Length: 135
Picture 1 (cartoon, rainbow, N blue to C red):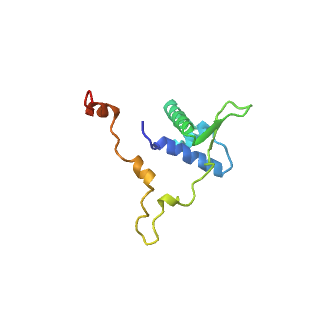
Picture 2 (tube, rainbow, N blue to C red):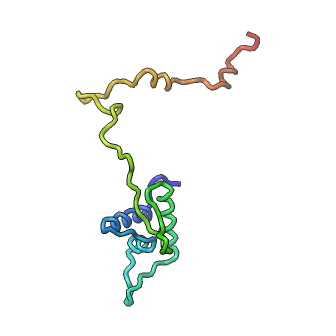
Picture 3 (cartoon, helix red, strand yellow):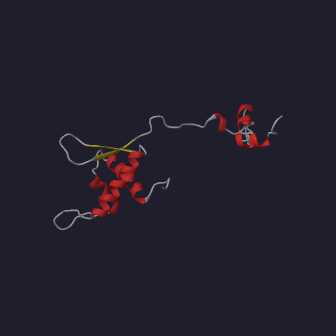
């Protein structure tokens, strides 16, 4: 399983962001049309294949599991509409532990409690092997 976004997932996010800028809530079909750049035929109908529709549905499900988007239905609609999830507590500034010293050198060493937690600790099996029987 990859940790990054795939092409379809990025396309989904971009399509949703573009619709939100226009004040719209896109359906799964609208997102698929945007990702695959489907043009309307002579009658004005836009056709997407089942494979394209399934790929978009799976990408949206993955984004929903990662809490990047929210899908919802209105009571009178059968279609799923989507919107992005904005971070509730965005990270701002820089944490004091990561800040650099004013002179440009690395900041001071971490506290000793952190250093102690990084020390090597022998496993219980190795400790038992190292013991002398009968002593």
